[in-house]
Image: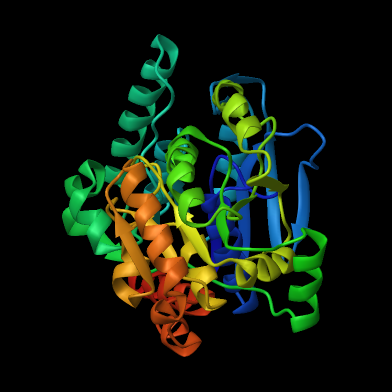
Length: 381
């Protein structure tokens, strides 16, 4: 099958959405499908066309930006040409251009599957408020035109205003999760490189307002009372993150206060992440709003034997609830987060589950197979 995937940002941009689509596209290509990704050339140094891991990538040049949104004058022409070359569409929201793609798919009698990754919640401001509204309308139009709408979990589908609107079209497909294979020597080398001693609390995310870094910062005084040598390792982009520059400036003085207890590792590759997770006593996902709908890193950590503590957001709480491998805390509650971290560090072995239990629920191949079966069913219908 020839499948056209579309999303605003794709790799090497780092986010849960881009990692999801990269894993899905690559797995479908391995299964023998012809996969094309249509996306933005958000960084002018990126090639307009390339093939990575068997996936063809087509990037539309960006003429202007509105916050995290992009304006791409040639996107329509590319969409016209590519839609004629494919049998089905896999569109990933939020995405301003999704309705036009979905309309093309329906006119060509192709299955159009939307995957709804999260709500868009830009920082306060008149322009951002308008952008939020425009994207909301765009998402609704795309949902109306879509054949099916994929949600990560039933939990998030039940609580999302967007997904409830399309209740009859919902398909729940767990997200793709995988961790690179690393040796004990590589895990130890990572430990020595970052001078890991004492209890280690991990975060793996972009430095972005919705991720809740300030909640963990607020929790640190209580954690350090119990474990004076505790330390946070933050894996992910933390400088010049699109749309988050003001957020970083606001938190920089607080990071300076805890410079001996908070280390930024930067963006890690797959093998480095696989060595990162086993070196943690606990991973935390203190996200604050529905721009976070699952938290793939929780399951990745669990596959490496590391428990997770997640905020009680719909969808985000599901990895812990489905595996029992961690704790769920109220959204934005620093004191509850601190006590949960202290509890998990003190009884870590109580939370660990066999890897086979985790892989039985989550894997990239299971996700790719579910999409393949969905497209096949829709195409036959």
